[in-house]
Amino acid sequence: MIEKTTLILYKRLFAYIKPYWKIVIVTLLSIVGVASMEPLMPMLLEPLVDKSLIGKDPEYIKTIPLLIMLVFIFKGFAEYLSKVTSEWIAHKAILDIRAEMFTKINNLPISTHQKYNTGELLSKVTYDIPQVGATLSQAWIVIIRDTLIILALVAYLLYTSWQLTLLMLLIAPVIAFIIDRASKLMRNSSTEMQQSMGQLTHRLEEGINGHKDIKIFGAEKYEQNRFFTAAESLRKHTMSVVKVSALNVPLVQVMAAIALSIVLYAASVMSAENMFTPGQFLGFITAMALIFEPIRRLTNINQTIQRGMAAATSIFKILDLTTEKNTGTQTPNFTGSLKFNDASFCYAGENNHAINNFCAEFKANTTTALVGSSGAGKSTIVNLITRFYQINAGSITFDHINIEDIELYHLRKNIGFVSQNIILFNDTIRANIAFGKPDISDKEIINAAKEAYAWEFIELLPQGLNTNIGENGNKLSGGQRQRIALARAFLKNAPILILDEATSALDNESETKVQRALIKLQLGKTVIVIAHRLSTIKNANNIIVLDKGRIIEEGTHQQLIEHKGNYNQLYQSGFK
Image (cartoon, rainbow, N blue to C red; front, side, top):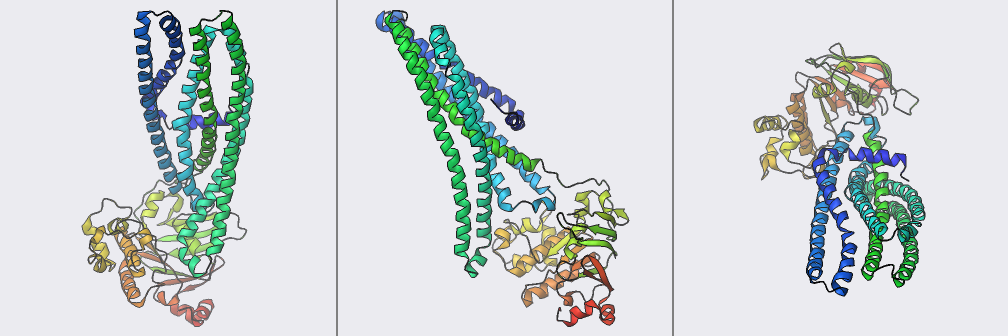
């Protein structure tokens, strides 16, 4: 019996093939064509034996072989059509699910991303979705086609001898119980198998991304053991599915064989007593034998269905997650002024506030630096300004407009961000600079590159802007990567600019060029600097010193030095 949850999952999955209903109809018609041809073979055997071979009727001698040939031609064409169209539908559904999944992942809040490791999400897109695709391309075809075939063959058997057919059908409840029991076992094992695949993908991703650290710390053996543990877990869960599936099929076949043996004996007795003609006997036995193959396929497809259902559960768990809230409707012209009004925020699962009753004003066209030890709340403030997180109390306003009333895309469109942790994409220099602005002109891209002192090395490359920079820009030096990121910020030209120590870890020549670019980039903008080195913020209009989410000092560099407080201690300790 099909569980209610399985029916709900199938209903959701079939929503993805609903747009292609015309192709679905073609597929269904071809399936009906295949199924209708199946009982014709045993039906034609009766006149072949009785009329042609025994009766020597010249009309049947000519027509029966021709009809058999036509049956196989029509059946072959229908099978080809059903296979191609069903795969087309399934792969269109896979494409749609993958696109929806990718869109969903991009629209999830940062807090949700932190609950999943990258390997888990990759596994759902690369492994789970194809499992669902197999269910959509194979399972429903096999179920409909082979059910129709069995019904057609049973109808023929009932027509030929209803007594023998009922005898054969006595075994059906036992077969149904075996399949139902196997379904539950395979669903559980398939779920565990997919979780193991997520862990394996995560281990693989960490090993590839961290290959330098693994080598330098001599951790090859440790990582090999971790990967082997994940791979072994996947193997065990896979074998659990294989064992159940392998036992399921022979059990069903043995039960069917028992029924067949009993029916064969009874049919032989009836034939001996002239209750069957030779042709009828051969047709009946052939029809019984033909039932075995669709029964085997229906039993086998159960494994595919259970894998697909477990995968669908995993996929819909992601698709049902809540996306970022975008309740704002206002799209004001930003002057760059923003203010925190008694804002408090606590990360999920944490007891202490990351910022507490935080009040600060970032005036338009000024530079404000955030200073403090690790965990003081600097990054949290930036995450709240960009609305990666939402405050728990108080408010944040941009030009006196509450952040929650501003349309989310419009808000982020007006914020530029340059970090020491540059993220570049495995694409051309042009695409990386114009990231998020696909229709921008080459002239504007080149101007931005010149402003960032990036054009001086770009124009020397054989392919110029069309040069592919590799994964995260690994074909470029650190200084070149930083200048590409700066060119991106120049092109965006947002009124609010956040700088997360953009010059750290650079050589002197690169740092000099990046610093010159940063000075130009900050002109006419509200700049917020997360300071790791005090030497980079001496000229800031305002410096906010943080400790445990609270402001403990505020003022210019000179004022804070003269105050001889926490900032002065940091400065004197060599944090320069």
